[in-house]
Length: 79
Image 1 (cartoon, rainbow, N blue to C red):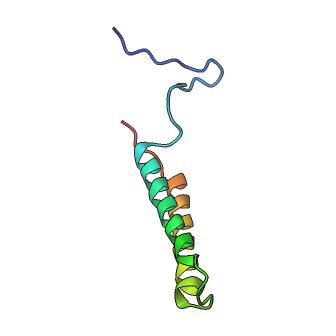
Image 2: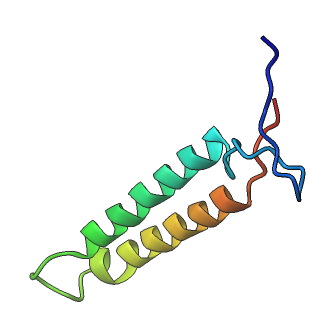
């Protein structure tokens, strides 16, 4: 059988493709884990002016958001 893909009639774009590629989703997962790690570093009731909570954790969260932006902007590889 021939490999026939369903096409959208107006836009002529295959309807069974994902917006992002596998590597994009992997980078999104990594970014999400980095963001969660940053929020875990912020958690706690002891000294709220600790270096870990006031400096390290926000930097880790910002790095996570930068990874997310990279994952969204990265062009998926074509097969």
